[in-house]
Image 1 (cartoon, rainbow, N blue to C red):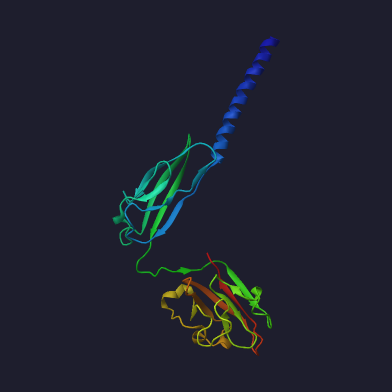
Image 2 (image 1 turned 180 degrees about the vertical axis):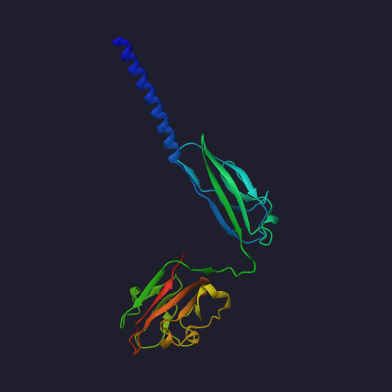
Length: 257
């Protein structure tokens, strides 16, 4: 009886070990297999056969395959089974008035494991200007009274093209990346301004800074800044504006999404 009991224990141990190994292997493969949904904005009337991109999927072992399960409208796209490349199959369907959004569902497999990917392709409205509005979190910029405008810490480097600061000899803000001092008629160079907010951007009239508002009255006013070269719009609210030729000012502005 003692020999049979020992044999039973050995058999059970082997079985449990095999089950655990199988479960660990399955779990490892599942964790090591990642996919992300695909989202894209595109102008209408694209080229037939144009590649829109690849489904974002990865695995550290095994081979991925991609199966297009459904799409709306039907026949709009094709998905390569091996690479996950998304190609326009019928360009005539990519018209905003008919199909403002094209959707599809794809199954991505890695052996016996599989995950679903949702594809969303948004057609840009041709009646709406194609520009960018920054609606990210608010940033507060401050230039202290008497601070050196030539130092980077005293410049709001919004993009590579626009660095806003103010001199200590009086006057308005200017773009030190493009100009050495303020010009009443045009500074900050490369920008234009309007009173209001980006929520009402279609109805705003953009002009040079001083034409939009007198600097001494700027505190507390909602303004929209247009970075012309970058074609970016952002909301700006001035918090302070120092008089008496000390060059201080501060504002709060929106950042990139």
